[in-house]
Length: 82
Image 1: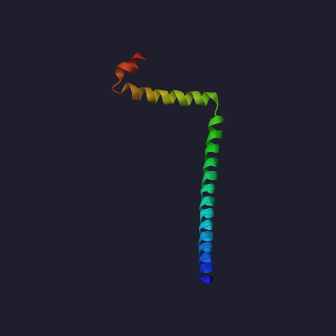
Image 2: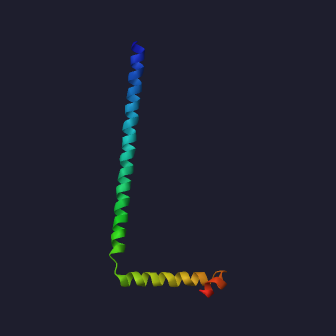
């Protein structure tokens, strides 16, 4: 009976060690998630606080670059029609 108890105690200690290890990993992941959320939150605030004029300037610059790329492609008949 003692060997069964000893085996159960050993298994119990191994499980406790595994649980502690998993909790540690979960804590690390939670920390990464929080840091990522804060980074995106800052970007979101920066984006949403832009003026309408800044947004219009950004998109017109983007579209002018994009338009040049499309006009240089092999779809010239499609892009020229629009």
